[in-house]
Length: 190
Image (cartoon, rainbow, N blue to C red; front, side, top):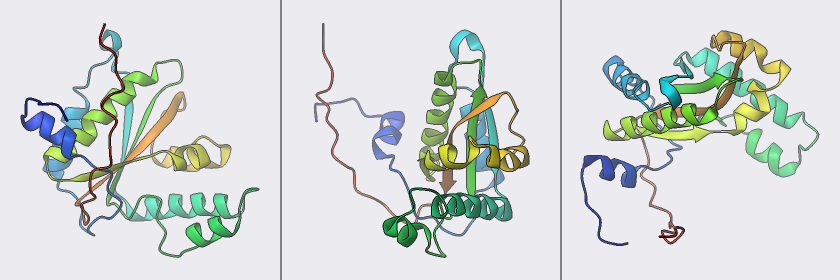
């Protein structure tokens, strides 16, 4: 890697990893409020702030959504032995048993870039607090964008005119994955 200037922000970016194993302990209210404050200070086009966050910490809600996701996979047209082995495990959690999951949505008439910037602020703020995160995409397409997912969208109070972009798990990490190789040559200087 080239010589770079190191500071707390750069360190948080470089140290961030997707965490898929969490301690069975809820994040504090102060940590949650810090993350949300950082999220809502993300840039947005025209300062539209066109996003919505559903913070889910209720274990029963998360378990119900996990069950619906698993049932959809196992009963879907593409269920094979590999899927049954992975998703049929009674301990499987699409959230990796994280105590907090945030679902990020944006107005269907809006621009998803704003919500993406908000999401990056969430993961970097969490990293700076010593918390782990992981972006979730599968549950969005397999559950929350389908008619059968409406009951879960309503439970999370997602506005009807919003599209769910992704989820983010948050919690105290119980793993420290090594950095994966990055191709830092994918740019051009003109």
